[in-house]
Structure formats: structure tokens, C-alpha cells
Length: 130
Length: 382
Image 1 (cartoon, rainbow over the protein chains, first blue to last red):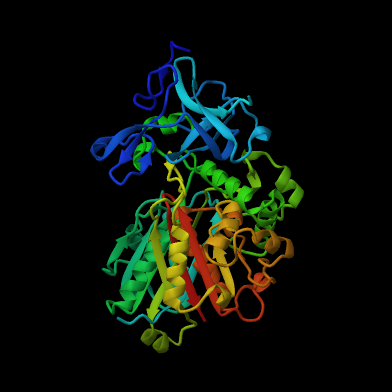
Image 2: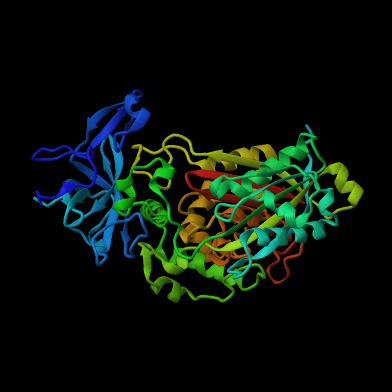
């Protein structure tokens, strides 16, 4: 896991409990990811919460066309949006869950997960019940 | 400004797959049909607007139609290409710049889901590499949340598709001409939960041309005309949830469809209750359901009752997608929005044959929606 490199630089922090890096615009609105190019000058990096709630979800059961570059053979995956309260709603992979487990509004936690043998990506998973 | 603009001719090239005929040739076919319907010659057209998303420029059509020196403006506006051409043609007539204008849209897409490139949408490469850059996901994510918030069932998603294929069997320009029963729709492979393969439209081919004219010209020609009561085209406002969004604003925002719809009704001086027949963007079953509410025809959640009671059937209280919509016709992007207007022309002129809406419909409403968050509404009045 530690041998894998992030799918892109600047998406999440390099710390024990990594956080997504968004951008806070002058009007206070937070976007994800941090804008690049000329727009970067108009936003400050903002570290996002590791906990949120499920906003929506779906399955990806067939292999997307290029530029998708996931592992072969294709493994179906889940994607969704997670609302980080008071911050922003981010689009994300969902892991450690089956469709039957997912309920809009359920608590979710951030994770960095393998994308393929060489790269990692970000995801959210259902929060473990205490 | 003379805002009394009419459609006097409508032509279509059947949607679906036509091997051996280019998208633009399908466009020429539609223009010739529209000219014949209007009872005019190509040389009578004083302004032309048209385009496609994937089948080249429209102005080359003059090679086939005739070198009349007509000003022909290419429109390249994604899913709003047809709607933008229509709005521009209407403005050309309304401004007094001409008395007869053409709007044409055509397309020919490869098979399979649309293949979007992140950079063209201002998105980073990882967004596509990790498999998030799919339009089908967006529609599934939007309806999944809508169903949870407003009590829409999977069965209702299936009923929308079943209606589309049933209407398609009655329509000579539709691609899918065979009925599909509800169980088959609901039990088909899932593309993106909750949507099965029969609940999505497919990229396709086809073309539509419309001839617009001033009131003066309508009288001169004695044309079988339908008046354009309003056209409104809007892009997305702050906070709207659209395709290819790595993040969305907490609490949401406006919707391009709601804004375009309100503007079109206001311009026409009528409300949703005055509409006799509507063609609403149905990229997938859930889109038709959500667009019923976004266009003001019902409150969120009432669609469950509408579909159960058959209110949006051809003989129902407010028929929706009488030619089978995108689900039965497929979606050639440049032509799709104009197909809706074409179908309203058919209905308001009483030429629908087996799919004719009964009791002489007077007001036709059409709504196209597409990436990256735009919406165009046209209201026709007989």
C-alpha cells in the first residue's frame, strides 16, 4: 500500500489520517479538487473533513471507455457523493460496501485505497458501528 | 422587433442507424423534406443556422442544396446545438433581417456510451482515469437521490420506458419500434443502479429541419403554420448539480431547466396547465420523471401517481414524449432537441395518425437538457 503513488498529486494530504485538499474561494465556497491554472490564484487550499454522510450512490458495472485506466480484468465498483457538513459535497469511490448496504444519509469515513498495483486513489467507506 | 414568428415547414430523417448515409446527408434529406412541407424552394431561404456535435459542419450542405449565397451559420453548442439554431433562426426573423430562415440539426455517433475527454470539460486527467467521467453515472446519481427524497419507485422508472417503447411503435421516425414489457425492462442488466439498459437512450443518427417565417410570409404562402410562442435557452446557475461534477455546493442551488421553463412560460404568457402535449428530455427514465417537476407540470413525488394512472400517455391528461422520446428515437445530439419541436408540429397540425393526441391540441411544449448543464424550452401555439 505504501509503495503505491497517488493517482495525482495534491488531492489529499500525506499524513497518518489523510484529508482531501479542496479550495476555498474568496466568497467562502469550497470546491474540490483545488483549482489549477489561473483559477488557483483565486482559491486557498482547504483541508476537508474525514467524515460525512452519503448524498447519493450508484454502481459502475461495465468497464468505462478510455481514459479509464483501471486494473485488468475490470472490477465493478461503486461511486457516489459524500456531503462533508458545512464544506462541500465530493464525488468519490465507495468501498467496503455492497449496494444493499447503502442508505442515503448514512455516515461515511475517508480512506486512501489501492487503484491498481502502482497507484492509490481516494474513497469513502461506511463508518463502522461502535 | 416583430416577435410573430411561425414554423411553416418541418422535415425529419428517420432516427436510428442508417449505414452508408453520412450525418450531413441525413441533414440534407431533412431540409428537402422541410422545404417541400413548406411549399418553398431552397432559393427562398434567406438565413440558415445549423450544426452537429459529431458529424461536421452544416454549411457544407449548400453543395447539395444549391449555391444560392445564403448566409449559413454553423452552430456548435453541444446538446443545445439544435435549440441554439432554432433560437437564432427565430431571432433572425423576429429582428426583421429576413422573412424565411432555416434551422437544421443532424448527427451520427459511434455505438456505445459517449466518450468524454476530461480536458475538454476543464477537468483533471485523474477524473477520467478513475472511471468517474461517465454521463450515465450522473443520471443514476441524480435519480437515486431523487427517488429516496420523493418516494419514486423502480417500477415507475420502468413504466416510463415501457410507455416510450409503446409510443415508438406508432411513430415512423422512431428507432425502437417494438414494445418492451415492464418485467423485461425491470429485470434487464443494470447499467448504473437503479437504471437498467432499457431505461437509457443510446447515441444514434438522425436529422431534423424546420423552416421559420414571418407572419407576412405565412399569409403570402397560405402556409399550414404553427406560431412560436416562446423560446428560452439557459445555462446552469450557481449550485446546480450537473454532469461531470467532482464537487457540488452544500444545500444545492438553481436548475437550468427550472429557469428556462419559467422564462418560456412568462414570455408566452401561459402556464403549465395550458399545455396540451409535451416533449421532455428523457436521456433515461429518471430524467423524464425529474423533468416533469422541473418544468412545472407536477410537484416532486407526484410522478408516482401520474405514471400509475397513465396521465402522461398519448390519451392521458397531459401526453409526454408522444414519439417515444430519446428512449425510442435514440439521441443524435445535434438533432435531438429539434426532433421534439418536430413532434409538436406533427401533433398541433393533427398529423399524428395512430399517435395523434386527441381533441385538437393547441399548445406544444418541448424541453432539451444536456451537458454541461444547459436547457432550452420552446412553446408552440396553434
